[in-house]
Image: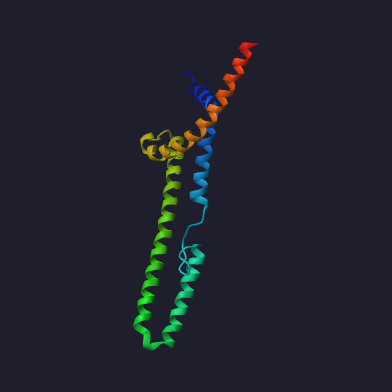
Length: 164
């Protein structure tokens, strides 16, 4: 049996589900590899900032603390506690950025391994199950809806031809 012909026929029959799956995979890759990592701002925690903005805020906060310490030697103990709290926020922010970068790297590595395995013919489909299940759920929901509309229109068209 011709596998390529069978696959092309299945893709054509479910064209919108196939298209939705392809679009979701492309969008997921673009999102996880193309978006810049962000974390909560040190000055306004409700705002998200990039790595450069975060580091800039961290420097500004450090300079502010050095100035305050020189001016307010009587409040050194309170100031050191506040510096420690900001350092913990900085560490937490850096850890958050690192975690996001590691997730992106894992996704890129998984896609690379999948592509290499497909090219080498050593692809292990069991290892792809969690990745595929997430994409398939979204793609099938969107694609099936579009396919059903197309199929309903085709059935109505065939019924009209049968009446004529």
